[in-house]
Amino acid sequence: MGENVAIAATGVGKAFPVGKQSVTALRDVSLALPAGTLTALTGPSGSGKSTLLHLIAGLERVDSGSLEVLGSQIHSCTSAELTALRLREIGFVHQDFSLLADLTLIENVRLPLEAMGTARSAATAAGREAMSRVGLEGLEQRFPAEVSGGQQQRAAIARAIVGNRTLVLADEPTGSLDSRTGAEIMGVLSQLRDEGVTVVLSTHNPANLSHADHVAVLHDGTLHSFDAAEAGTA
Ligand code: ADP
Ligand code: MG
Image 1 (cartoon, rainbow, N blue to C red):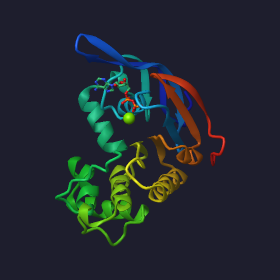
Image 2 (cartoon, rainbow, N blue to C red; image 1 turned 60 degrees about the vertical axis):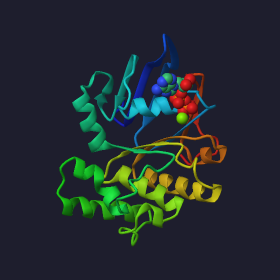
Image 3 (cartoon, rainbow, N blue to C red; image 1 turned 90 degrees about the vertical axis):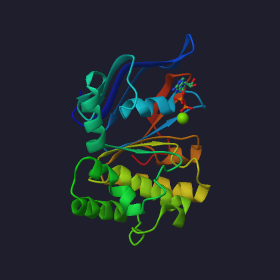
């Protein structure tokens, strides 16, 4: 495996128990994503996009196959190792921002560092830097309800990269935003990619695919195609 591969999935399968049945979410998915690229996962609702992101994040376990993320074989990591990898290296951005309403933006953004035991002053400094990278300087003391949806999503992205984490996974990051704001958020993610961050996002919006270096199309849990985006910026 090349050392510039950030994520390598080989024959990955995942099923969920539903009553006495089991629902296959992913079947024999293999792909390799180079570090410092932006990959869009697309496909119909229920095709397995969120499941693949959750597996890469170590939030769910693969049932079969192997999955290497940032040099760790995460299919064989202990829970403690997975938690450590996630805190240190991986940021997750949700459709609905998932900021804590009772915390200011800077308190939200520095939270992953505080969870790792970083001192308050160092976490705050890193949080300010992350906020400035996504265009939020000056809004550190606002509460989430006091800024726009686009600014909330920028804060969620800042929380994902705080402490110079280099892998950002984003599940429908523009799904709650109007198209203009969604395009701005794609611009922020593309800029982070230009700075060397590896970005993997899921999206329903064809307009977002033009920002991607690679597009993976999922159908019913299988990888239908994996390609450089036609209008990509690679
Ligand atoms: P997408 O994000 O593309 O809409 P998902 O990854 O959420 O797709 O879902 C893929 C399939 O796995 C769907 O059939 C979905 O119902 C099923 N699934 C996902 N998560 C669970 C779960 N926790 N329990 C049961 N079934 C699930
Ligand atoms: Mg989903």
